[in-house]
Length: 374
Ligand SMILES: Cc1cc2nc3c(=O)[nH]c(=O)nc-3n(C[C@H](O)[C@H](O)[C@H](O)COP(=O)(O)OP(=O)(O)OC[C@H]3O[C@@H](n4cnc5c(N)ncnc54)[C@H](O)[C@@H]3O)c2cc1C
Image (cartoon, rainbow, N blue to C red; front, side, top):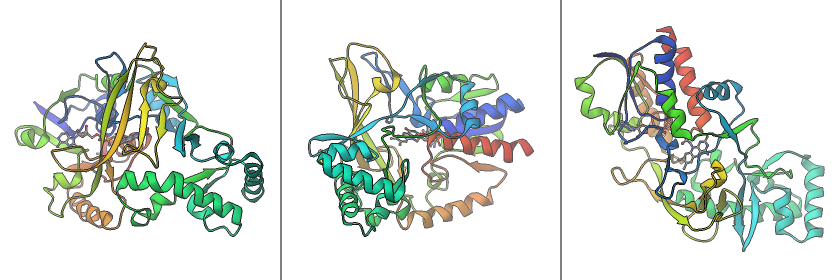
């Protein structure tokens, strides 16, 4: 059998592009996935206690892009869900991103009111101010607030997450963390938010159900690609691995999840509780909040950031620090030489942190801008 496309990786990038090619163009597609399941890092499954969990960490879908939302809605209904995150600071739980409610939970009432008034007067309601910007203020009360958030919410979490000091990370990461001048405790404000009603894996199954799509699990493409006939490859794995690390290894941060089942209906107040300053883990996620599942027990995941080592754990986050982008640009130049024969798509092949909607977006874009025109 000759395939039009060999697609490496069955995450959002691989499955969206496979679905478009097979469904819209009637192209013959083979997806090769080295793991034993589809869905990439968004994979979910029912564990031995019957609880639906996200194997590679909690995934909440959110987007401002109606086209992406409508596209995915062809394969799933949605459970309306708004993510709420609390952080434990000095034994108190406060909403993050840090907002007006967090201020009232952290400071005495009269002082909190003063801070609220200054913020409202200076910036207005509903505005997000990066903490680093707020730290530059000449208002002593706001400066104190900014330092408090930096020291108690930002610094500990960031150093645990990356094993780097904030100043060693790209400004793009550190400059994003805001104070939200609002009473809105939702973690995201995007227009479209939800969790696939029957889970992510079901969504992926429907996306790859087309008879023009063949799927090979538990297979590293390097072991089989020479024996398979195909026209074009779409590669969604790590770009440095593709080129046998000729320019060195791209740095990644990994994670370890410790799943615990608890014999009560509920474990914590919200789906996610962060621990910026205590413990080795960064956060605890309780999945039933996301899925709305009813059961007499509940499963939580403790999340530990880890150093990435090939063959030991998975590459999760590109490390946004000096040097990473230089290595990537060398691989990108190699990739450009293969234009038209191999497309590099998704978070590992483009060495970018993509949210799910962005991963879907770049795949749809590749289809519309390049594939459909070939
Ligand atoms: C902890 C965590 C939480 C996240 N939470 C959210 C969230 O709440 N909301 C959100 O929008 N986004 C979230 N994301 C981002 C989301 O996971 C990504 O957007 C999405 O997984 C990107 O899809 P992808 O297909 O590009 O990559 P992946 O999902 O990683 O898929 C790539 C696939 O390629 C396979 N592969 C690699 N090498 C080979 C090979 N040699 N041969 C065969 N197959 C190979 C891999 O096994 C993998 O299945 C989160 C990410 C992490 C790490």
